[in-house]
Length: 392
Picture 1 (spheres, rainbow, N blue to C red):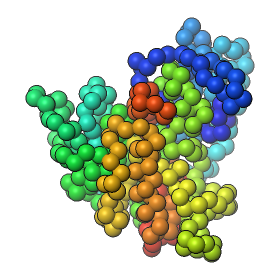
Picture 2 (cartoon, rainbow, N blue to C red; picture 1 turned 120 degrees about the vertical axis):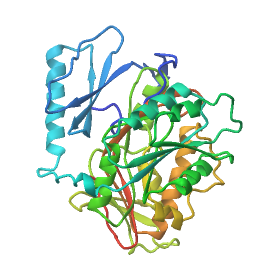
Picture 3 (cartoon, helix red, strand yellow; picture 1 turned 90 degrees about the vertical axis):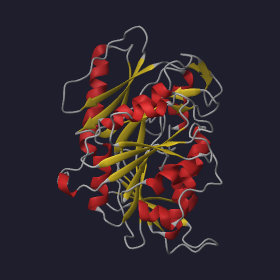
């Protein structure tokens, strides 16, 4: 599938960020950061409109089937129409070929477990938080709650969070005065009343099928302790958004639309017992080996779900890592990396699956907010009793 980087894209940010701009490429030359229209297309539906509107010069097309993302097609909207359509059809054909021939039937609605969704916030951007809450309210899931963890140092009067919770019986606001996203997440875990706890950020817009995809994965593989997934861009207008996607790979650092399984390699002799990961594809073929510390490449805090008992077993998130809920992408990823590393070191596996949500967060290279994100179906880490798990 066509892509300007080594993996398909994930995240984009705020619309009021300065548009356009130039950035240095790997060769040192300067190339314009061209704004791109982000489009979601069902490969079994009609093709999208690909005309050049005078502003968006590229199109980043998320190819889906049944709500599950299968790949990205990147097209030059200023190119010839016949060429654009031909390239898109090639990418759609690859997406179809990448999907399993006999997809599993979904579990019954009555079998789906209750899930608690934890959203830490300092409420700096109420408009983005409101979009996040609205998307959570559109979830296609029978039994869930949302815990909005108030991590502000000072609660203003009037309090805008109280207004967000009004007439939303599925939403609760809980207070955590200790600053830092780890403390806020741990508070959410403590207050949750579900066996599974999902985490996202206050600038994310989740896909309506988000929780259903997560629950399906846990039900099909009862040994799983954690599931995570893609975070895709909702917009690509500013230079920061575009370069973040193109050269840094978006959130998580590794983006793949294909199932993988991560296993701790018990045969590897090293100074750190169980210190190497083995990555396998859906057919069980080994793709690569990496250090246990590499588990952080497969997860970001905006789209991760844990079995509550697993988090309690490792005593939750490390509160020493006092990154803010509005902290930079790199520091926020460290917190998720630390938790997954500690969970992996006592268990056997990490796997990755597909599912989605969108949002906006801090820029990768500076404190400017630059990206809205979309999380999509997801990966997982397994318990000692289940030495394997897969990314579907």
